[in-house]
Length: 503
View 1 (cartoon, one colour):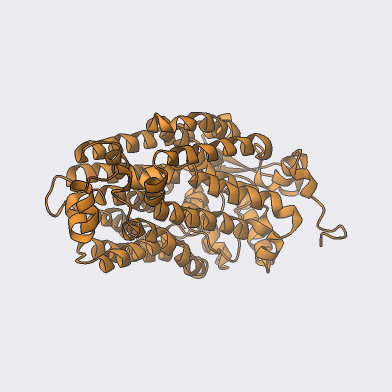
View 2 (cartoon, rainbow, N blue to C red; view 1 turned 30 degrees about the horizontal axis):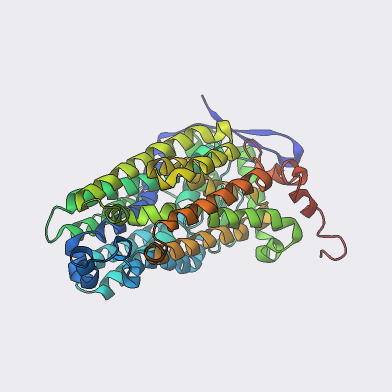
């Protein structure tokens, strides 16, 4: 049975017919390797930094504290360079996205994904064969550039009227060319589930990294090299797989290749009746081309609700403490008294639970709505002090995927690129801060670090209750009229840019 996408052009509902074709499935598998790349790097660093062979070679002072020093367990891993090994990737991803965005617009998604895989492979080689800290850090920076390119241009889903195309894809990284590629080739009946699939790929990459860490920790003295080197596998899939796929219809239309764009639209939809959707793509591209300064439009009063929510969602996502656990789970479990093998096995269990609960989010996000899942997670996540796995469950089906979904669907056409840029930049910045600071914070705050994150979770819950409207089932083109203008607080910011004092 064909899938149907809803459009609200000119106030009337229009249906776009589409099928899930074999080509779409193949493209999805290839593009998903970008999520695996990113997830693997999230999960691998914590395991490697807990391996004795790695510490002895690059961080001997940490190795000594781990095994010989009679000091507090909380401070054994407090080392800024060790934290930089993890955090440098995210800073590099943030900076590289400025360049990747222009490449994605000028040359298309396909060459951008290929460039990402090449940066990634070079970074993997430097890490796997590193002989000093400099090679490790440079390798991580190149991995970050690969992530910035691979995840470039996740703009929005195409579930409502248009593909919401914009001329400049600025600063969009973490969920960006791969997710946009997935969004543009897929039928758009289930907006939330399709957007969350990329997050699912990330969690699978984390799980694979945990498995690799567990087994490679037993291979002395080269296990850490293999663990870092295996990151090249998804990069190879992305590189060679991208040779088999073509550009998305939206990318072709943006570059004025209209006939090719129409032919590709017919191919990926599996139907010949694509006139309405094709015209929507062309119209959206023309409208977006007329937007000369989306960042200036973003500063208008009417854009404030979406901008605030987009940025706050990213800050809150990081201050759940999730990446502190994902980055440093083995280290954290060792601090709690687990031996090396037990700590890595515990991380593996956490990773498996993360994958399973992200699947729950895919299944429920378009049924229960965004707010219900976010509020449930806030109540569950307060148990992090006692039950880390319960915390992972709450995050994986709520703040993890929805932190990306909600900003992608709330901005109007004229500010979507700029608005999502702010959202993703905020995420990368605070990911870097958490990765760089967590081990030092744990040393100084001890168990209080978890109460610190718990306090943020309480604040997050209040934010969702009072300031986050439900967007389930609302076409993106109708978001302003049906959501923002009816919200008890945000409605005061709508339709006031033309009033005196709001120009």
